[in-house]
Amino acid sequence: MHFPVQGMPFDPERTYMNTVLDGLVSTGAPPKTIGIVASKFPSVQFISVGAREVAARRGIKEVLYLEYEFGTREYGPIAARIKETNPDFLWIGGVGVESKMLLEALKTIDYVPRGSLSIFPASGPLVQAPEAKLHMSMTVFEDDKALAKWLKANRVDTIIGKQRFDGPNNFGDDLYRVRQIQGDRWVVVWPKELAAPGTKLIYPTP
Image (cartoon, helix red, strand yellow):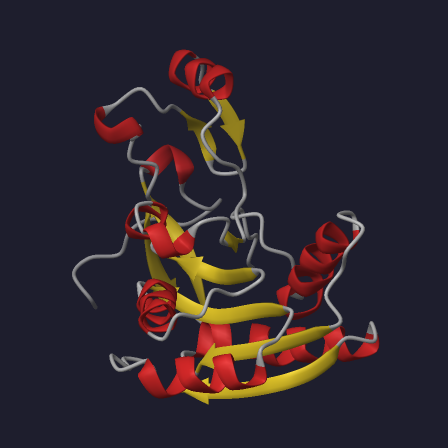
């Protein structure tokens, strides 16, 4: 049984692009064309494929769709394709520093996207990059001093127990348990008070 807690929906390939486009529409000058550049890394590739379908359904003309190998370090040719097609909005389905490297490559050929977004970028390096001015990405929440202060002073009830955020680097207690395969399923076996009813840690293997 799986209960996701990271805030991601079941279908990010549908919701992410819709959220982005809703935001762009709110400016009064929504994009008419889009370029989608996607890493083949599985966790982002399927989101970009879905985003492509959403954009088409919403009447945005696709002028570029390009997938690149995960681990690509040379973004010059990709940047050239983007400049050539000149989309109103650039979607970068990348991870880590990929979007930063692509934006750097665009800068070297004197091209600045009219608007751009990456899915899961390395936030620190990107926010310090001049070429990333006004670049967007998906997030759950950003620095909120009032919220941060409250979290450091309070424990929060969650589905995995009470969590605190007042330790080193805002970490709290270790809420991990020991589970064991018994029969045809996983069961929690330790700590004893949290073990599944009627189960105990079996050791050594009979």
